[in-house]
Length: 121
Length: 407
Image (cartoon, rainbow over all chains, first blue to last red; front, top):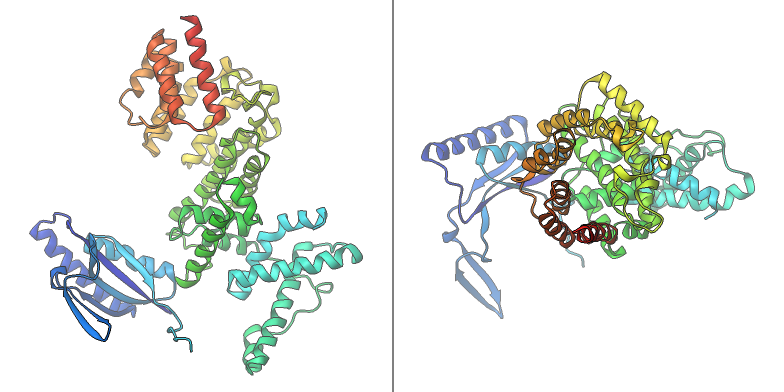
């Protein structure tokens, strides 16, 4: 089994969803998460706070530099994610198809590196 | 490589690599093993003679050599027993028992190479490399890109297959229509690259032959898929006209003006027989309909004998299945033959194809037939601006000049 990140990318201009549609989208997302749990595919999931709440910390020249705002200026940012466990890419794609329908936005799939990265000597 | 062994290489490479990938679970290691086995063949065959089943010999030799290598590596890592369990025992010498590659392996390989998670240019490069046995420089020359670009596409695609665990298997029934679509487009794209190259570049024309070979393979592996048959019929019927499409001076010859005695009638009857079988099966799809249209053209002994109303009907069905402006443009050409150029022109005026050279070339032809010479000349000029193919440019220039002379 391989673990995959299914990332929900929110663009700066979210699709105009009505209140009702937005509510339905949250419900669909929860239903999908339950389905992943039942199938034994669920590892972890979460929705991110607004991008305005981001803070970046850097360690430079012995000092910690703390800045307000996201790491990169970009039109798209991580809105939420699932981490799933799947037999292969086709199984992961199958979850991703359901995920893009549930959250009304594109899903980026990325495998976790395996075996866990070992820093070379 | 001697000519004999090179021919075996081209014919058997895909089969052997496909079998070894299933056994070894890794594309790169499988390719290395197959190439090593061909190196052994190069030394042995000229002395001992070519074995009765060269592909099976290569698979068995490659398999045994990779078992030996994995053993040596395992011993080094003191995990001999584990390796023994993993890789089993060595098969007898290839001369004694030859292992038949399973045809399913090639089908698995095609679906892996054409997985939708890979970019189409990577799907094409991987398919030609792994199933066609083409070397990187050959693919680069055929697609007019640098060797470094092709090499990078292949390395990245293999890496993505490994990292994301793209499976090595034939998709389940439910997924098959979608997945088959990308396999068929890759083969058709390979064909079109060769077909569009009218400059007499043999390496590019070779792509047509390679595409026909791949299409035949798809039909052999998936005999129940009507669209695989449709694709094979289409490429046969189109390729049959290759010798008549370009005049001795290199200029392009339109279908209506082609010397039909130059057509490859063997390929045409093969294509027509497949189309007839598709009609009986009655599960039409875009490739089958395009093949049927070309079969109607091929059935006419001269351009004036063409059954345009049959072609118009087929384009109507194609447009219903794949509603897109290029199909609408082609349908309008048939409509002009059946109902006259004014009807054809009316059918294309609203198409959103301003950047497509054939739209302007078709419009120019219809305007010319309506006697609207100035507008026709302007349309030929617009078409000329939009193509980079020198043969097509020369054709459009000649059309425009002939109008200017008659004015």
